[in-house]
Length: 420
Image (cartoon, rainbow, N blue to C red; front, top):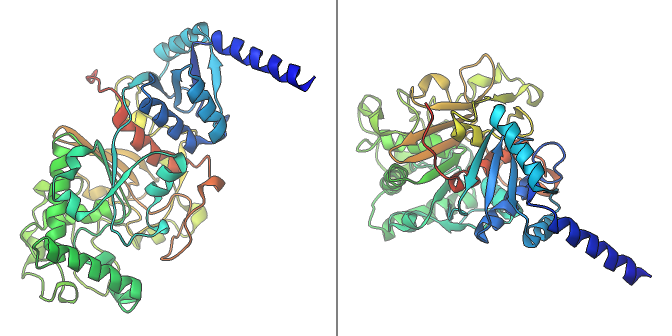
C-alpha cells in the first residue's frame, strides 16, 4: 500500500511539473529561507538555466526554468518555490508591465573573488559567511594575486574590513600586545617584503589603485566595514605619507592633510584623516562616535531603503530588493558614512532619518560599478574581536544579509540601456 501511495504522489508531481512553465521562487514573507534562495538561483545560472529577477514583485522574486534539478535544490536547501503555468507567468508579466516593477534577465553566474588575508577568521567577514551559507562558490585572493593581475579572472570582488592605509585597522592602542595583532603585522610585512615594498602602506596603496582600475575597466566591487573608507583614504593619499611612526617607522609628511588629492577616490571627498595612532578612527568619513547621540541604543538604530523606479533605475532597484524597507543598524570599524562628504554622483540606497549619515551607497567608475555598505555584520549589532561567527541558520530571512546577496547576483544581470 505504501509503495502504491508513493507511486501516486510521484505521478501527481510529474503531472504538475509537466503542466508548469517555470519555477517561481518568492522573496516576500512566504519565503522560508531568503538567503539560500540566492544560492539556488546562482546554481541554476551555473547550470545554464534561464532565470529572471522580478524586481519589486513579491519582494524581488526569481523566475527560472521548470527544472527538476532546481526544484530538488530548493527542497534540499529549504527554499520555498512554486510551479507556475504559462498562463500564470503571463499574468505576472502583465502586472509587472503596469506597476513599479521590472523584469531583469540573469545571464550567467558571476565569478567571485573575496579579498582576504591568510590570517582571517570565521568572524572576520559577513560576506564569506553569507556565500558559504548560500552555497555560492568563491575564491580567496590577497595582495599577491591582486598585484599580479588575478582580478582579470573575476567579475565580482569583495573587500571587508581591510585597512588599505597600512595601519592595521587602527587597533594599535588596544591590541598591540596581543598575539593575533602581532601576527597580522608580521604577515603583512612579510608579504610587502616579498613583493618588493619597504612599507606595508605602499603595498596597500598599489592594491587600492589596482582595485580602482579593475572597477574602471568593468569590474563589480562590493565593500563593507572599514574597506570603503580606507580604500578612498589610500587613493587620496597616493604619494603622501599619512601613516604615523608607530606603524611604519617614520613620521607623517608635514602638511599631509592639505596634500590629499580627492579627485581619484571612489565615493568620498574633502575628508580629514586621523593621524593619532592612539585613536581608533581613520577619518571623519565614519560618523562614529558622533552618531551615539542620535542613536543611543540598538533599538533606535535603523535605516531606510529608498524606493526607486524599477523601469527607469533597475540597478539601484536590484540592490535594494527586500521583503522590508527598514533594516536594523549594525556597528563596525566604519559604522556609518558621513553624507556631507559624498561625491554628488553617488546614489544613496539607504540612510537613517535626520542625521548626516548614509549606510548604503552605489556609484560608477568608468565601465564598472561599486557598492559600499557600512558596518560589519547585519545580525551582530556590536561585533567584537573574537566573537563567535554568526550562525546564519538562525537568520534565514535577514534583511541586512539580503543586501549583501543582492550584490552577489547583480553582476549576473543583463545590462540594459537606461531609459532616462
